[in-house]
Every structure is written in structure tokens, then in C-alpha cells.
Image (cartoon, rainbow, N blue to C red; front, side):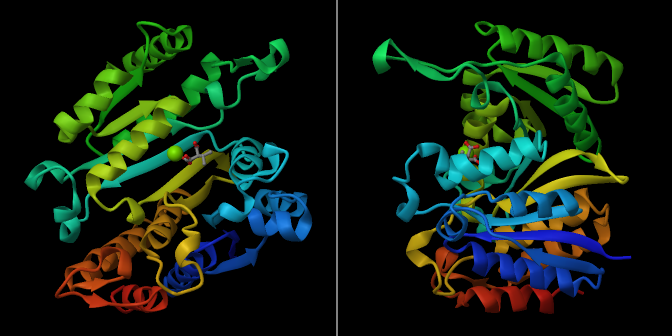
Length: 356
Ligand code: IPM
Ligand code: MG
């Protein structure tokens, strides 16, 4: 039996970094079958839509999805705005595939610690932001202009069910780590946050093996700078998670190296998920073999861990990444004097060579 992976390379550096992630997955020896489909600006140009129906169908028939990056200046002014790659491809992909649990680890890679903006050991963090991804203000209705355009309305909606399912995934992930969840909300102001806190508190009482505390979003933004080591799993809603995950990733100093997973419910006994680097399409360096493929490669490792429960191969890849960096092998984005500059492909090869 083989596993089917939909590969959506997308725009900019997407194809280059995704190719290295596919190479690494092949090097594990697991029987994967890869199938490519168009997404983003390239899909808009070739098919007239950033998320063509055949791409969505392929994802639905696959065990997991590997995504590169979408968007670029070429499509920034596409009209209507709903056809822009970010809004027209990423958001519907998330909701159509029911990818409600966004897992964004922020783990400092030891050889790159000096790149953290926090001084010394303060930048050494290992936390996960669990971001609700298919609800809240990103998807609330109505969303409209009123008074002839002079007033704008966005709506934030959460149901008990939506909070419960992301919280349960957070508990599951906390159990593989230090078993501490900080649930982040704005319960002193927002009704959705009060429901969020109520539901998470109830689940906390039913899962006493995990320690659950609550923090307001503004305080959390501050605590992440003051003492980021206090966090293990940060559980939060869609927009707060968007902001906090950028903040947390910056602390690692290696924004461009971080992977992510967007998970749904189990399908045929496996957790269906979409895996992608958190970085963008970097159109300025596209096609030059200068991009860093490590975020894409680490996303492939997350796929092995979450969808295929193959912790052994996931660890092999993570260890190979750390070893490669320790040996001073660098792509241009993280190059410094005394290290060895390599291309995107050479970085992929270096990882595979070190996958013992
Ligand atoms: C992210 C991005 C997206 C988001 C944008 C591009 C729609 O910022 O994945 O964090 O806000 O979710
Ligand atoms: Mg974001």
C-alpha cells in the first residue's frame, strides 16, 4: 500500500523548496505517491482561479497535502480581491478541507540562536501555537460595507463545537510535550472569548493530566517577549493565533525555517493535514536556487509525525537538519562568515546525506 500526497508547489520559491521536501520524503523509503496540482497565482493565470476545483478534488482524495507558497506582486491587484491567491486560495482551502487546527511550532535551532532578537539564552524557546483556523472573524458573516461604503462590518462567531475540537487537538499535542496549555483570549471584553474560556475550562477539568491556564491576548503578547520559556502550548482563536504565531516565530530568529501543519479530523484512521512553511513566496529570489528549503523539509517531517504517525522518520529528518546547520552549511538567507554557502538543491542533498 502507498500513501498519496497532493503536492501544491504554488508561486515564487514554492516549487524549489517543495521539490527538496519531496526528495527528503522519498529518501525515507516510505511508499509515497506524489501528485502535483496548481494553486495560487500560477493557477489563476493558467486556469482562471487561484484554487481550481481539480486541485481541491486532488486534496480531498489524498492522505496529506504538501504546500509551497502562494502569491506575489503580480497578483496583488487582481480584481475582485476574492481572487487574490491569499484570500482566494488559502482561506477556501482551509475551510473546504476543514483544516481547523493550525499547529505552529516555534523552536529555536541551536546553531542559529544568535539570530534571535532576545539576548542570549532568552531566545532559546520550544513552544507550539495551536491556532483555530476555520472560524472567528476570518469567516464570520455578515462581512460587508454599509452606508454606501462609509461603514465596514466584520463579524466574529464561534460555536461551542468549534472551540471543543481545537481544544481537544491541543490537549493531544500537549500530551506529547510538557503538558501545559495556556489558552489565550480577550474574555474581559469579547463574548466569543467568554465562550472560549468556558469551554476550555470545562475540558481542562475533564483532562486533569494537562495543566490549563488562561491569559488575555495583550498580556500574552507581552509575556512572549518577557519570558517566552514559560509557554509550552498556546491555544487560541484564529486572529490572535495569526498574530502570536508571527511574534513567537520571530523569537526563534529563524522565521524562514519554521514549518506548520493544518489538521482536520482523522480520515481512514489517519489525521488528514496540510503541511507548509510559514514563510511566503519570496518572489524576489524565485527561480535562483537561493531559497532555504528547511521550512518545507521540516513541514514534511511534521507530515510524517501527525498524518503518518512515523515519529522515527520525523526525528531522522529533524536530526539531519540540526546536524547540517551545526556543520555550518547555510543557504544565503542564514549565511554568515565562516559558514559554507549552498544552493536550495545542495541543502536538500545535505539533509538526505545526514539522514542516518
Ligand atoms: C498566515 C497568513 C494568512 C492568515 C493570510 C495570508 C491570509 O498570515 O497563514 O498566517 O492570516 O491566516
Ligand atoms: Mg499570518
